[in-house]
Image 1 (cartoon, rainbow, N blue to C red):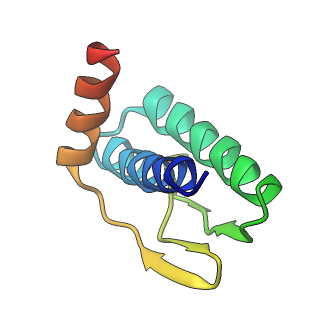
Image 2: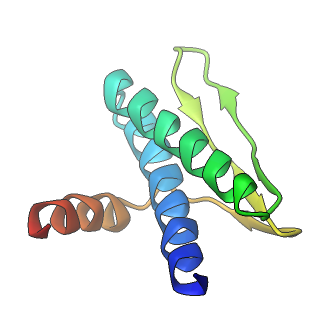
Length: 95
């Protein structure tokens, strides 16, 4: 179960970075889809007993940004890494 939790947590961080990346790239559709994935994963983590909070704000042009995520009392600042976005797509193609 701990491995499952780790995978969910890492996927949440990756999706949050994708939210920020697509806001920077001005791709509203992918920005919002990845935000939806963040909220869904945060809900699953909460149901598994891990208090989770995803900070969110909306940019002037309607793009969503995730500055930080807190899981089990540990706050992590979220960047806008393209490497994580590319890794998500690579892993999805491998499945």
